Length: 472
Image 1 (cartoon, rainbow, N blue to C red):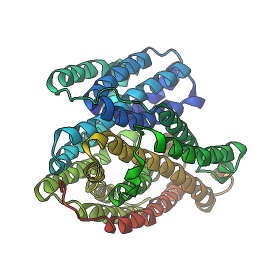
Image 2 (image 1 turned 180 degrees about the vertical axis):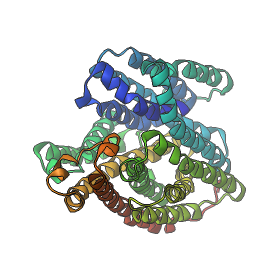
Image 3 (image 1 turned 30 degrees about the vertical axis):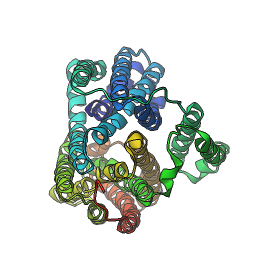
């Protein structure tokens, strides 16, 4: 899991050097989109394949594909090649993520799963913090290609440890793979991801391509349901949708992904554009947030292992995250950095209080033979929620900024400042710089406030979850 999570943040730090070297600025977003798309698809498919053939095998396969993709990315000669090789990396990354949590469900008793899932969440926090710093350092020292090459020794070490230390689980004879269900689900995932990228603009949603995507989704969902009902080994057993714990856990996870992960995505922009922090400084200021997530998730995991109960952690999580989002929405250009850090830590704690809880909850409502399938749904729900959240928040930000800049910046300068980079902020005259930071602060405050009602809805749904003991 460290490999997959670290890769995303490391690559983000190296991307400016990549674009400078191989070009393709107009397509650079697909370096992340291609990776994320195949990661989400492989998450669902990999979870089911793990149920059929063993999660250890899926994990090992994921590591090998990830290593191969990393090597190819390092050798890429242009942006098109890099995007194609990132797609391969995403296949391996998706298998790694779902197999990691599925192995926890396979190896440990229900009450113990939360503790070890908490440790895995800590890995996510550490990788998210270390990634930008490592990526920047490696790129500056030996070049951007080594951002990918560094995965090779780490991957080989992981491969050796898992191959020799992890026990081999028995498989179920000659299982039947649901190829049609997998293909329909992959097509549905592609359509959902592409539609999520258009949510930021109503015109884009209502365009010919946007409507075509909506129609495709409407057609693919019932087609997939029909196929799954007839499949001997469906990708996601439809009976799970009759389980309230499964439905609520995935719904709340999607809402949390929409609000929390999207908010986290815009925090660096606030620090750089509204508060005047450098890219490095903004990264350092957000380290405490991940530390809050790490501590909260670890303590929650241990507490669940002791009490075997989990219901009130999601309630507390959504309440704390909603409070944090509200406090973030009150910030302005003059808010001191220590206060920004306090609010972000609160958001990290809110996220950490439930990040692994829903994974444990859905694993507890499924038989061992379906651990991979249910685990995959939670990861998938979080990814889909984050995709729509980032796009929607981006639309709110753009619309608000278009209104705020003319109010704070005199004359025709506002039009030329809409896409101004944070690096250019210090070069502006004092009157323009002040107006720029105030406009960005007000616009981002609105963005952060949008998360509040979403998290309050998640809070209400959390109250509806059953308070059942794990292992019963």
